[in-house]
Length: 527
Image (cartoon, rainbow, N blue to C red; front, side):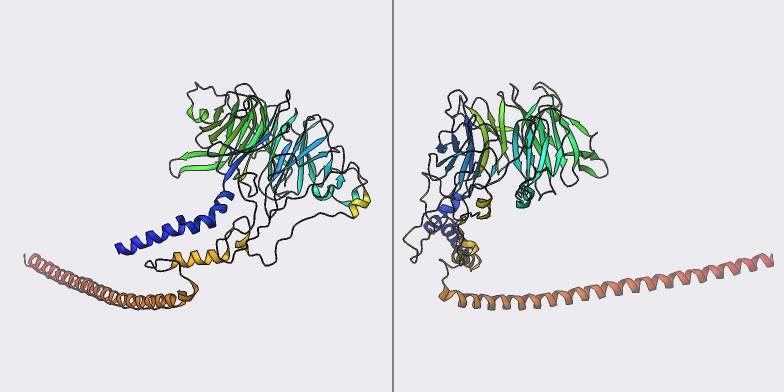
């Protein structure tokens, strides 16, 4: 047994730490590594940039210069489906959109914006309309991209159906919102959409009026209002929608954690967890203005004081809270404990305008060979195909019906013979999966991977061993049942026999008592 365990340990080391595993899974490990996407701006000098950081060490992985985007003006598309992703950043005070791709650290394309909704892949202008009375501060898509939400300085939040905006028959009419969320009294600063398909989802909206409101899009109603002691500038909502973080742009950099549940103590049932809110217009939950010297520990632990004005926050894939400040400092907190894990100060002097996390792009410049089909087998292809970049073309300035009718979007179709395990996002082939599974489920005394020539005999031998073991277990089970039945019959007979004897003794005692009673009566009569 000790020898078999030692051999199994050796085989597992070969499987998970051997050179074949390293060659096969090096790209997989790289691809599943989480990184930080950070955009900075500097209105004075215009020397902002977009930087990718390692979330574990804080080291800079790549930097894209000539960017000065303000908050809510930066986004990215990850590399997937054998195509490289890109980055879009709208520049302030200019009708320019800078486009980057992960394979180059320079601007790939400068697009003159018509300041309207446009198709990125073809450049076709779909629609343009006046959505609000004043400046728009934030735009958000729902998780399924079926609706667009816009927040403005006019304190309104409009929900737009994408299908209606793209409808060719209604291009000559003014688009109307699906509905409007109009309970804020001051400019809207941020919007976060929850999980679920539109309209079966919920939305958080923040405003300068010190409030964050929770809406249900399916019923078009306000569920709850959260009031804060300071104006809220940005939000971060946990994926499971159990809690959210609301950050203020005040000098102390207060970040409030608001739980959407509470724990109740019941002596009979113990701790009970129930949801909070949902009362409608009159349901208001107030976040206390907690000072660091407060003795209320339950409220104090729900407040994070950064010490600098907060410009943006985000939650990572591992539930770490990323905080960007106007001084250029980037803080990483553990969201359950609020412990500061790391501080990145490479952007000091700039203002962080956007924060997000993503898996490390497979085509990131300077970090990986841009190739497909990493395979260590002898039949591997020696010529490597480079990963193409998803196309971006200049946008139209005006709507054109002819261009719309001949709308063409270039795309790369996946190979028809591609298997789900051969996708570049995993780089784990079907053959490798079957080989590893055969080794892992094989006998412990095999010292190497089983090939196709000896797999069948080994499996047949294993089947015969298992059948013999099953027969032995059935025989032992029958013997155990016989012993159990014998014990049960013995116990039952003893109990029944004991009850019969006890009943006989009771009847004899009753007979003696009756005789004694008759003799006493005879004595009384003679006397």
